[in-house]
Amino acid sequence: MTRRLSILFAVAGFPTLGRPNRQVFNQYSAEALAGVVDLNVVFLRLWRPGWPFLATEGRDFGRVHTLAVPGFPGGWSLSMRRLTDPWTLLLFREVGFRLLKRLLSECDIIHSVDVFNPGVPAGSWARRYGKRHVVQATGSDLNALLPAEGRLPVIRGWQGRIDGAACNSAALRVVLMSLAPGIPVVETVYRGVDLERFSPSLRDVADPQQGQGIRFLYLGGLPSYPYHPWRNDTKGGVTLMGAWSMVEPELIAMGASLVFAGPQAVSGCSESWRAGLRHPDSVCVAGTVNPADLPGEYGKTDVVLVPSREEGLPNVAVEAMACGLPVVGSRAGGIPEVVVDGQTGLLVAPGSVGELARAMLILASAPERVRQMGAAARVRAEKVFDRRMYPRKMLQLYSEVLSLPA
Image 1: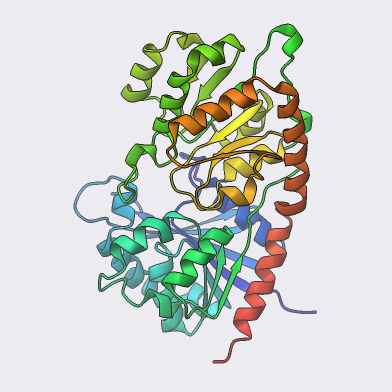
Image 2: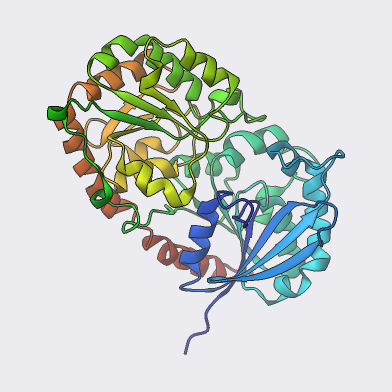
């Protein structure tokens, strides 16, 4: 019998009891990989008083080892800025050398989700212990963090500590190959979606005969990313507010409505915007949707909006397609790999209030076209984004990396 590979799956975010929403897609990937390899998840996070520096717990798919280090400067904020601070990466590297010794010695490959963190410290672990290192490029790591911090001493030379890369989109593959042309194996590997959990069968289709207009859903919120020039418009929430205001009378006349949700969506900015609308009752501002509730949320929706200014490959767009929903997305990152313009949704220029407004008007006025696009979206999701493809493609990449000359 062939021995299963042992993979150390390093992540900088993972669901916990207190925060079940935290980087839930890392858990989905871990669950998929655990079916074909022996998996140990190493979750890098910032330490708080009373916590051990290394804690291990069993999950259905394997073990999760939480490596916690103090952040710099003082305080206990778990912000993105703190978790990607170069001094924090240095601590992860040095503490990991010692506390993860057994796991690092016994694994065949270290698989880092995110080229920056945990990719930078994990690359050093791999070289110290003579292991192959595979990174998974996700988006912000290549588009913002490495360009901003890549020349710092603790990070410098990161390209030479990677043996293979799985990029979440073809667009990210192009970016990575331009930043690090010497990586031996670089492939596009879509993480995909659970086609049974996200299905058109769960949908409550709007009926124009009953006076129901098109229901738009936005899940990007207004998170402020310190490394991105667009700050709280990185996911396009500010652009969307402007677009809705621009054509609100026409949308309301057609019975359209909007759910505006996601991280930090409930804020002074969004509340003052909603209060200034002529028809605020047609807009619902909500917080982050629990992953367990997402299929139901999609089931009450007709069109999903993904107007991001920067992206890797947005999971929400793939989930929407699997649910038989068209997507209005921007031509940013991997979004055009998901949305076939005019067939499974509409594409607009990133940051264009006018183009986004026109796209919403087009679909709000054509419910039959929305249904046709949604059906085509489901077919594309089944063909391209079936989550069951992910572990098979990762196994192929692992095999290629292990076959590289020493």
